[in-house]
Picture 1 (cartoon, rainbow, N blue to C red):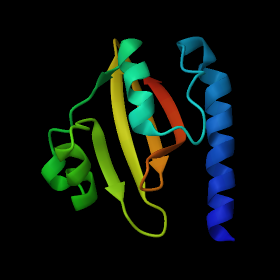
Picture 2: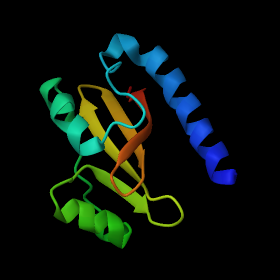
Picture 3: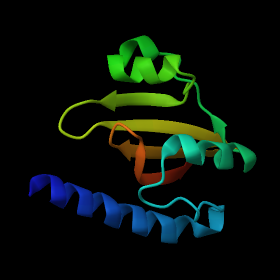
Length: 115
């Protein structure tokens, strides 16, 4: 039941994020999309992976993802629900994508504008 509540909460967060960020051209990001399938679209729209230069301080799971070429992985947890965080940059904006499941299903995302 607790996992279901977490999933509902993440879905609502993503829905609100999608509505608020539609003007950033990110409305194509939907719950359940697989991060690796989404990645080429982000690159085509000018979002660049932010390499994790401190990957050795991240979890072993994140280090595995990094070794597979996903240099934008910030960190992962592998417990009841596998979850990872990825970051991209476009000009003065940082896009953070959170995934759940070992397959990398998108759970939520947000864009932060840097000063």
